[in-house]
Image 1 (cartoon, rainbow, N blue to C red):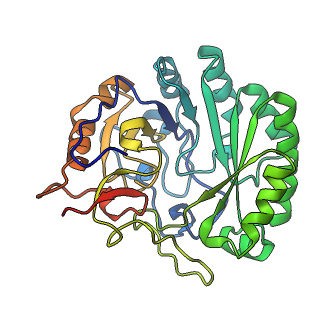
Image 2: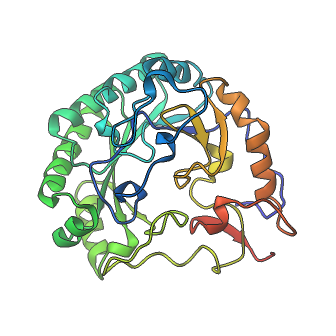
Length: 322
């Protein structure tokens, strides 16, 4: 991470894209706003001008229109990877395999990533996704303890393990990669070592340890047994100057199902709307005034600046100056 105030060139386009093809989730994870009964996702709020066949009312699913998705795919030249998940469970999209195949047909060498909680990842679905072109699938296991898993996600742990085993076999058949994700705040002593032995030692599958945090203040972690990460965030090291998770404002673009571009995977309330791919190209948004202004604000290590979501995010890189 460069020092505060150091100029960084984001390039003509982002390195990667996160694209929300559908809203909603089948889980109720305590560490995710999607699990809140009172939460109304930003993309389900009124939008001036309408969004055509993407528009739905609260309580229903929004799905990105085929026309918008095709427009985005045609504009992916020069981008290394596309991840078809954001604020959702991507397998809720019945057309997910077709969307993956469209990207593969247009950009055969592009890295394609899916992150799923795995409850809907049946053996048939796993094989279909790998056959369509998914190159990396991150499986959100979160914890290996059945009771903790059920309490924190609302899902069935036996289904998760059964689907994970089938996904590992399917990935090997198609030459794809599976990554297993767990959360630091949900692990008990010795659990990480046991999981590494099982997945890395036995299968050669990477185990990723994620942070359990409040998604930039969008959830309150009050469940017994949750131990949120406290290494970063407000009071933990000073002013936000960037992102420790893929340096997102300089590397990754995040697109809602309606085409609006938001700051990151914690911008659930669309606090920073940086462009609209219904009307703009990826390059126009990436090099546009809203993105550039936000990057300049993050590079300001002293003095006043506009309020930023990053200032309350525990995944923010920080400096000591205020």
